[in-house]
Length: 123
View 1 (cartoon, rainbow, N blue to C red):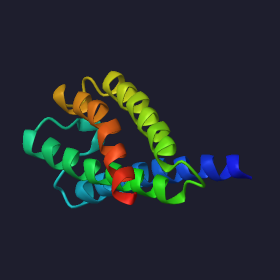
View 2: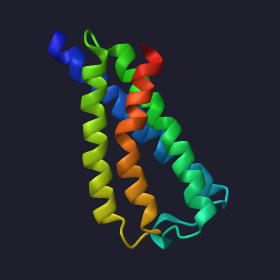
View 3: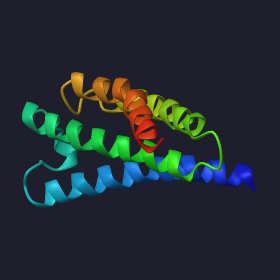
View 4: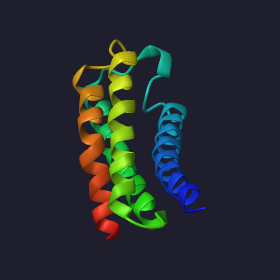
């Protein structure tokens, strides 16, 4: 049971980041702030905005993971941060031609420290 709670805590943090990021992207596209996803995103201020809200969501994801962890919250947050680095690195590879190169690289680099910050805010 404890293992399932641990998996659930990490999964809840991950889903929080993904769902909030995708939903915000969709809203900004619908409002015409961002271009359609298949067009790519190359305007610096748009990328800075996306990095900002994704950073906040990553902190929230770390907080939620720490909050839901049955024990050793920072261990759970560390696992989430490592998952964030892996997914961020995949994002660099997949999204290389969809935006300025600094953007996906920054997301991958920031994944762990922002997740960790969220966990520390919970503690």
